[in-house]
Structure formats: structure tokens, C-alpha cells
Length: 205
Image (tube, rainbow, N blue to C red; front, side):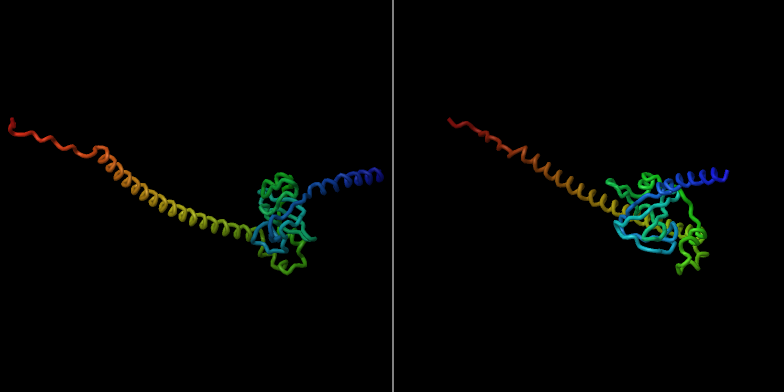
């Protein structure tokens, strides 16, 4: 019985190892990007991945926006917008994540930092980086982006109004110029006025 149990465990391990290896996919960084201690720019940077460097993708959030990767012996999170397929055709962002079929994973500061960042200086501040902190930071970023989008929309609207007014003035000048040309054409069409013949008042024999 014990031998059968060991054989079953060995067989399960043989299938488990390739499955784990298959779950990890290769990717390249499309530009220099920070490797962060969590799936948000609110988390500290743990390294910088250079443009064109390869990373190993362990999984991504269900939103496909951030992925847990390995680089240079370290673990961290990268935005999927900076991850690209290492193959012939390049996909970035969520399209890349869908292409490699990265497993959906979750994130917890406590367990992730315990496993990977115990020796880092920011580890003692882990209570500040609970799940609520990054969400607040993301909301601040969203509000800032919204305000910037509104400012850009107003700027675009003002520029469009200026362009419309300029085009309207140009059209009016063109219309006046065309009307002057039409009047000149009508004068040329009538031509010179012929002189009336002089009728004598008396007959000369």
C-alpha cells in the first residue's frame, strides 16, 4: 500500500512540474519600466527592467492590467502595457496576456511580501501598503486623469471654435470676392453702350 502511495505521488509530481513550467510564459519589456512590489504605481519599485529585457510571467490579475513576473532573480509586478510577446508578432497589454493565456492570480501584501521582500528596507512599512492604500492611490490617479482629460477636451473645443470662426471669416471674404467678380463679369457682358443716330430736323435738297 505504501509503495502504491509513493508511486501515485511521484506520478502526480511528474505531471505537476510540467504544468507549472507551462504556466510560466516569457515576455519582453517594450521600454525601461519599474518592477514594483505590487500591482500599482503606489507600490515601491524593486528594480528596473530595461527595454528589450526578458521576464518570466507567472500570472496576471483578472483585469489583465498587471502581471506578476520574475526578472534577474527577483519577483515583482509590471503593467501589461509594457509587456510584449517575444515571438515574431508583437502583442502588448491585455492582448498579450490573452495570447499567452496567463493564469489569473490574486495579490496580497502580507503573503507576497513575506515570500519575496523580507530583506528589503520597505518591508517594515508593509502595513501602509495594504489593499486599501493602492486603491486610494489608483482613485487619485483616476481623478487626476479625468481632470486632465476634461482640460484637454476644453482646450480642443476652444481650438475647434477658433478654427470654425477663422474658416467662417475666410468663407465670407471668399463670398465677397466672388460677388465683386460677378458684378465685374456682368459689366463686361453688357459691353459699351452704342450711340444713338442723329436725326436731322430739316431736309437739304
